[in-house]
Image (cartoon, rainbow, N blue to C red; front, side, top):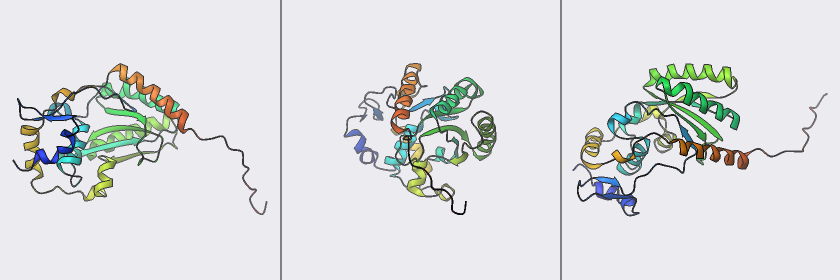
Length: 238
C-alpha cells in the first residue's frame, strides 16, 4: 500500500457511515441511499467520464479532504470546467432548471440549479454546467451566455471557472495547482483496490427534485431583501 488508508479514513469509519467490508476488504458506505438534504436540482445527465469510472463529485471531495488532506486536487477534477450562472430571483432559477431538464440534458449537458446555502458562496442562487476541458468549457460558455441574455437579461453574471471553489479556497488560484508525489499511483491504487462506490451512483429521482423545489421556496422566503423606507439624499448642486 502506498499510504495508510485506514488511518486517513478513520474520521469517516469512526462515525459509522463508512466501513471496511470484511468480505471485499474495501471501503464502502454502511447504509447507502439517495441524497435528500440538498438544495440542488440535477438534470438527468452525469458528468462525462464519471459513471464509466464509477464515481461522482461526492467521492472526489472525499478524496480531496481525506486521501489528500486538502493538499492536492484529484486528477479528474483538474480537467473539470464549469460555466456558472448567477440568477437573482426564484423565477429565474425555475426557468433555468426547466431549460436544463428539457433541452440541456437531452444534448448531453451535465448541469444543476439551486440555492447557494454554502456560507462561502456570496450569492443566493446558482446554476452550473459541467464540461471536460477548457475548450469545451469555452464553447459551453458561449451557448449559456447567449441563452441567458435572451431569457434572463444581459445583466445576469455568467463566467467560466475551473473545478470547485473548495479547492481554490484550500490551494489558491487554479492555474497554480500541482500534483503531489505519487498522486497518479495513489489514485490508481485507491480506485482499484480500496474503494467500493458502486451502490452510490444514480441520477436524482423525481421525488427528490419535487422536494428541492420546496427547499427553494423556503430559501426565497427566508432570504428575501427587506422592504425599506429611507430616502436617498438629493445630490448636491441640484
